[in-house]
Every structure is written in structure tokens, then in C-alpha cells.
Amino acid sequence: MTTRKQLLNNLLDIGGVATLNNLYSPAANSYKGSILFTRKLFKDYLTDELIEKIEPIGKPMNKSREVFYCLTKKGAKYIERADEYKYKKYQKSPNNVLHESMKFDVALSMIRNFQQAKFTFRYDSSFYGVQPDILIRIESTNRKQLTKFILVEIERKKTVDRVFNEKIKRYEAMFEQIQKNKSHNINQFLVLFVYTDIWYDPFLRPQQYSEPLTKERIEKVDVLVKNLVHNYCKYLPDNRYRFTAFHNFHRLHENVWYTPLGRLITITNHLC
Image 1 (cartoon, helix red, strand yellow):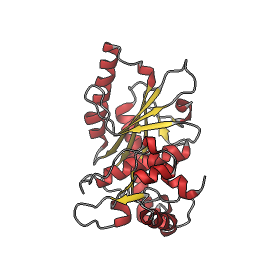
Image 2 (cartoon, helix red, strand yellow):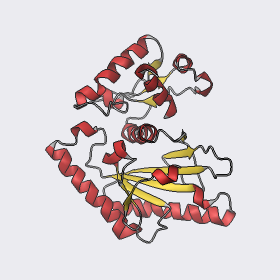
Image 3 (tube, helix red, strand yellow):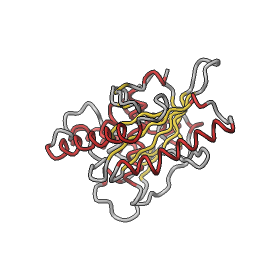
């Protein structure tokens, strides 16, 4: 598959909407280089009407980071996936742009780094009042194997105690309802918490991580994730939750996930 078609396939896979920044090239040596080819492709896509620009509300400070583009019906036909096309040209509130971008970063990373798995992404699911940022369904090739679900929560908060009190407690209540009503097999679920604080810039790409101020901020966020696990989560079911920092979004396949017991592991086994 050509890069031209691959990028459009990735765009459709994560829901049909993304920014230039989301679709950066991990192999590039610099940030400017990481979006240079994507910018060229997007220009061609727009000319050929394979994608459309979603006009932003207000004036974005950085268009490559804050302006979203969506796949067109023609674009879906071009990659021979017209049956999967859904209209997505909805304006996004400036207040939600950062969070939306973080969601698409995580979704795209799952596709790029777990190519052996077949994922379906939803951003509008609800389980007993809990609405995960992303519901990832893992399609199984074995009819006897249960379908697996990953619930992703992207948390950008000032303190980690809010993550526990406002989100994790609600998840535990949700699982109690699932068990009580026997609506699902509880072993089908894995919950991923992807955390950063309000001072970290989630628009940054890995090529920028070596900059001194960014490196310092990353180290502080790593400490906060450890505190979340060790001080609040050690009594949670160890097979139900995983925790990492958002700046690890590009390497979700590596040993960057804390279990409630504080071990660093991969999530690869859950995808098989």
C-alpha cells in the first residue's frame, strides 16, 4: 500500500478526523520534518477532494495543531472503503480541541504499534453512565474467544487525586453494576488511564521531547503517574487497570504501563 493511501486508511480507522499534528511521521528527525510530508499529502488530498477542512470556530493559534480535516466520501472510495464512510464534518469547540487531539493521538498509536490486532474505535459509548474517551473493540479471529474491550480515559488534571476520585471510583461502581446485572463478562474489559498535568503541552511530538523545558516537564509528569498508582490505586484489581503518561502516546506497545501493583508491563498480551 502506498503512503498516500496508508495515511487515508489510518484517518478512516481512527474515525475519519485528524489534524496534521496527529498524523506526524514518527521516523522524522525533527518536528518540522515530521509534518512536512503530511502537509504535502494533505495539500494533494484537498485538491483531489479526498479530504475536507473542518472550518475552526475562531482563529487557531497553530493551524497544524488545531485545525481538523475529515475524510470525504470520495476519499473513502479512493481507498476502497466507501461502505465504512460516515459524515464527520462537524465543527469542534476551541475548548475541546486539545482533548480531541489527544484522543486521536492515542487511537492512531494503537493502529501503528499493534498492527497484528484489528481495532474498532468509538468515541460515544456509555456503560452505566460512564463514558470513556475511547472504546476500542478488539476483533477476535477465534469464535470461541470473548470479544475484548479497552476503555481509554485521557486525563489532563492538575492533581492525580482528582483522577482517582472523579474517574476511577466511577469505573469501580460501573464494574459493580456489570457484575450485579451480568450484562457483560467483566474479564472482557481493560481500562487504560493516560495522564498528564495541565502544564504539559500535549501537542508536542516526540521529536521535541529532548528540549530542556519539555524534558523537565516530562520527568515531573512521570513522578505524578507513579504517585497516582502507588498512593491511590494499589488496592484496585491488578488485571483491570493500566496507567501511563500521555507523553508515551507514541510507544504504547512498550513497557510503559503501570499495573495497580506498580509493575511496568506491556498491554500486548491483552490484545491477543
